[in-house]
Amino acid sequence: MKNYLAYLECPKCNKRYVPSQLVNLCDCGTPVLVRYDLESLKKEFDPSVWQERSKGLWRYRELLPVRDDGNIVSLGEGGTPVINMPRLGNRFGVAGLDLKDEGLSPTGTFKARGAAVGVSMAKELGARALAMPTAGNAGAAWAAYSARARMKMVVAMPADAPATTQAECVAYGADTYLVEGLISDAGKVIKEACKKHGWFEVATLKEPYRIEGKKTMGLEIWQDYGEDLPDAIIYPTGGGVGLIGMWKAFKELKELGWLKGPLPKMVAVQAEGCSPIVTAYREGKNKAEFHKGAHTLAAGIRVPSALGDFLVLDAVRSSGGTAVSVTDDEILDAWNMVSREEGLLICPEGAAAVKAAEKILEMGVVSADDTILILNTGAGMKYTELLKAKARKLEEGEIPE
Ligand SMILES: *Cc1c(COP(=O)(O)O)cnc(C)c1O
Ligand SMILES: [Zn+2]
Image (cartoon, rainbow, N blue to C red; front, side):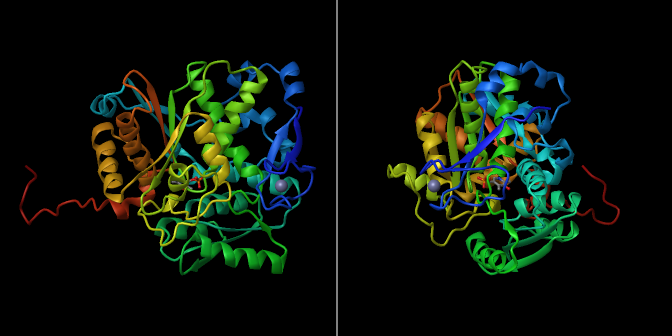
């Protein structure tokens, strides 16, 4: 299989790095992006081949960085379905309301995509031990894939990270630590430990390959919808990797000449209690300020500061999208509504995106005859303790009415 990986590039200062070494940030402190030889790929490859291969992330390996297939670490990630939500669409007054269900991924969230490519590359480039701060789900995914790769994994997470994710990390054999505070506090501990022990730091956007894994959501959306992409894609934004990744996929497909129609409006949704990117968007800035006192029940998007904020803001603006925030009460309402009306137990982050669909319709960002695609980034089953959904105990001798 031919590989088209060309070099790594800083999107700020344009400095290039050879891809055959472990790289964290650019010398200027910016996340680096993976670049491919798209010219050769365009000449030599027919993308209909992707459709013929079995479903999943690795069918796109010509646009992925792994050079030797022997280094692929896989648990069956990718290939998630797009499910129509006709009743909610009707209620919101929009022609098409679809949901891409990443809850069906290994470890129950789309973090599996980033972990699959990130761990595979760490293996290919000879890393011995990986370490990361996490809000919970990334740690669980990376712990699973590094267990599969037989690689040491160290995870630090907020002490109040969802119990399921804490247990997952431990179950996969990762060295798992709880930290008082937020993911940013866990980040400080990990950074120091990496410096001390020489572990490879794989925090969000501190290595270039997680984006490549999440990029495959964009490739799948293009294969599912063809030229007629959704008019808007709504993404629950923490570090923003999924949104940056999908946008990168669309741009690469454009450059390859394989995507000709208009691109979707990219919409970032955050929780009101933690909305640094929404604030920056409203204020016309291209960098976000640290969100002090961050709080929301949607733990996956409780990220007060993101290294890739400027990339998210650029994708949102250049696509004609927007950034909106929703309250925790709105998240809870939408969450319950989706499970009752559509039979889908999504995650609270996905529920934030559902509420945002209603908001961007009201704002006129999309119109009634458009199609909106919501990214449900994880499985609701990981968060049942938040649902407060209690069954009723039958009294002695009572029968159900
Ligand atoms: C991590 C996560 C997000 C946010 O992803 P980013 O790439 O950090 O923006 C959204 N939803 C869930 C369920 C997550 O675990
Ligand atoms: Zn740079």
